[in-house]
Length: 338
Image (cartoon, rainbow, N blue to C red; front, side):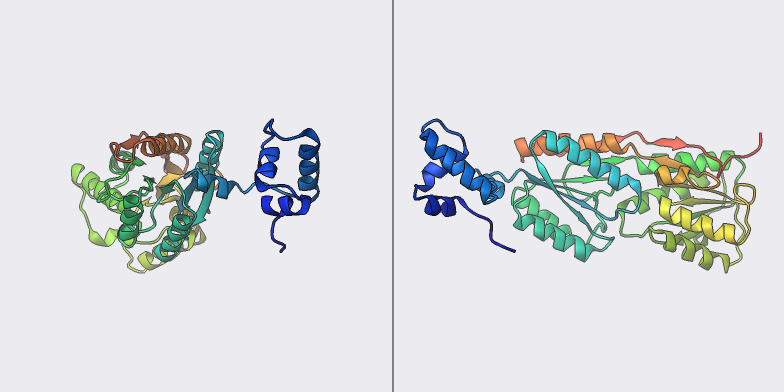
């Protein structure tokens, strides 16, 4: 790959000063018409483009925002990034997007890369609530605001945008119980994700409210993807514990569990109801369609930008937490005959 042509190169080739080239390229009036025309024609011929990074660096502003997400399998993060990019672009910002693949080491490397590129702020959905605390704090101490969304970390004093996982999970459990389900199991997320604890607590408290027995064996420790859901259900089935409903941590693990049960010829929802938090359009495309709690992804993106702009204006300003209203969508996977 050839090195890009620079203002110095143009000045040398045309025998003019660097400042003359710079003024001509910026279309400033104090350059002779014939000199400007010559410079612009030469620059076009050689494919000159402005080094925006260098310009912004001199101005102490890169106008770059980092976005860190744990996965790009479901449409949630895709839609979030699409919305964020649209809003930030209109404000004159560009974005660097990285995917941690649920790996805190990859997340750390991506954060270090963003630091080296001098991003002005980072929007992040954390893949682990402990492992990268030190680097989060270091970035904040350097004046780089971090806005956490969806998967947040309680012990960090930073702006956050999320839903009330506990309340919505409790409502979902309440719905299952009022629908006649009495032997509900919980396909839980990894213990190192903050949302996992909130959804577990809601599961336990809902059972207590309706005087249903809580059995630790009915909480199945799982991951977040399709294969995790399949493997978790396979392991649970070997225990031969009766169940009539599954409340899942997230959509992909729910789809994995659902697929495994259907291969065993379980009828959904007649034999077992299934539902989850963090549903997306995927849940409406399977058979039977799946009951979910759906996050307001575009609104979440809007508030992330709002909080980011507040921090860019005043890094020492308040660290607001915005809790958004999520929507419970009842579909065929939990419906019962009236």
